[in-house]
Image 1 (cartoon, rainbow, N blue to C red):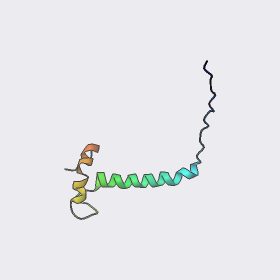
Image 2: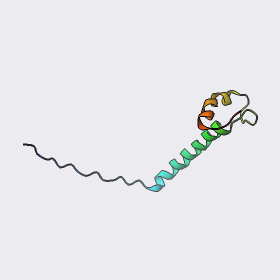
Image 3: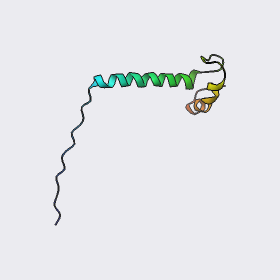
Image 4: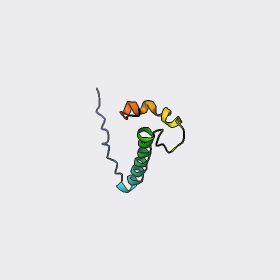
Length: 69
């Protein structure tokens, strides 16, 4: 004979919005910095001198559809 074992129901976890706001701001800022470096950092108008950052992110630009030529 098999016996049915009752499993307790899982209760949803309540996460206050106040705890999420700093993480949302942090992740948003990081994403904006990454968007700048991948999409806008060009050799002619770059913040950093040289062509190293442009060449490092070159394939990522093309993958995401940013023109760079």
